[in-house]
Amino acid sequence: MSDSTFQWALIGPGSIAHRFADAVARLDGCRLHAVCGRDAHRTRQFADRWSRPGDAAVLAHTDPAAVMSDPAVDGVYIATPHGQHFDFALAALRAGKAVLCEKSLVPNLAMGQRLVEAARAHRVFLMEAVWTRFLPLYQDLGAWLREGRVGALRGMQSTFCFPAPYDPDSRIFSPALAGGALLDVGIYNLTATRWVLQHAVGEVPPLRDLQVHAKLAPTGVDARLAVTLDFGDGLVSQFVCGIDGYALNAMHIVGEHGAIILPETFWEATRAQLLPARGTPETIERPFEINGFENEIREAMRCTRAGEIESPVVSHAETLAVLGWMDRIRALAGVKYPFDDDFPSPLPGHRPAD
Image (cartoon, rainbow, N blue to C red):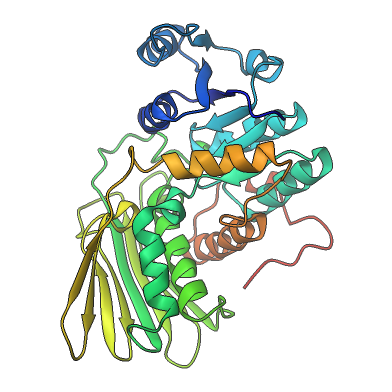
């Protein structure tokens, strides 16, 4: 495509979608062209909120087909509940629209493999919106890890928990919407684990052991998980994720000669501390340029304009590897979604990552 203004459509005008729309509104070279949601009034309010003076009004739709058939749409951002991601993403790929989809991309590995195959078949860009990997702070953290500033990596500990009012029909607690703590917030602990390993070790070693302790909600989804990922030789990542209470929501990276601390909300961190066993502690602060979503949006547009179907920062293989881990964790926790049987296994020839 040309370097003309990139036109985004947004499906699912919920709370996180406002953050996306805010970033698009303040970025050069793109605009929000259309919004699609189930409730006509709410969707129109969202569209009006993000229509910019002097520009064409943002279109409001209740039928996703209107987005997919619109030749002006270059890319589709999907922010619906997890259980709806697959259908919307597949429709967009088939329509030739680049896809930036909130995490988890889909609820299970088999669904993810089918979307990747669709992206390849139609030569259309597809990326899971793992915005953490694009944050300015993480570029400095990556340098610390690659330089061995804490010595050999020994382990990671992290938490991501918040209290959600129980509503069996909500996206967080409904099995039909792929609810539960793991897909909603635990994915951040998993992607951060893989990111640290990739920068400190150079790769993600195969899992030697996986231990899961789960507390389930009355609907059968995971309300809280305590997970240990064992990579052998004493290298482990431990995390707790939950939708039933508070936590510090920090991440500690432990090394032979020191530690790195992301003291709060590690997935959107702007500050980190390097604590060497000997020497002076070091603190870095890297604020957002806009709200943190700007660089993943830039990457999606860059790749689409270049004719690429995936980003090297959040590759298809990386997304599938995380989905494989989540399938294994859910199996050990005893969490099953009603549509899992519709996608019984990955496509032939695909080997799930360790």
